[in-house]
Length: 109
Image (tube, rainbow, N blue to C red; front, side):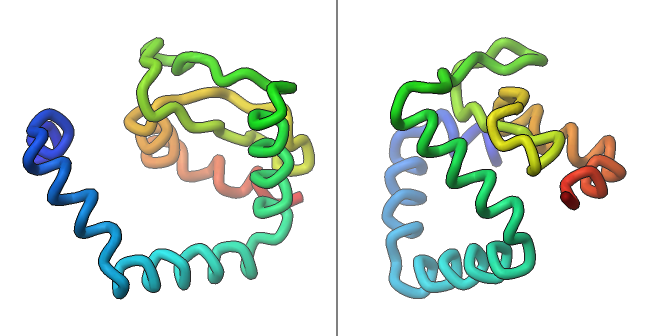
């Protein structure tokens, strides 16, 4: 199913349109607001990193595991060091968190 979502242009367009539906936008906003309220250190680290990427002070790199350049995320080992990140593609990032749930404990600063 995920490969179809990724590779089929018609499915990708449908998913893009679904993501813009008002109830989905509201649900995503509520989820983000809950996360940000619960994790203020992470919220601050994300904002600092995004600003650094925008201002070209930090450059997005390929995935450290598979070298993919698509959907690369920044993985913070410690939110107290917002610019110290490991770049991982979405797939590898999810795998890291699934295989090593104890990493979640390192995010508390």
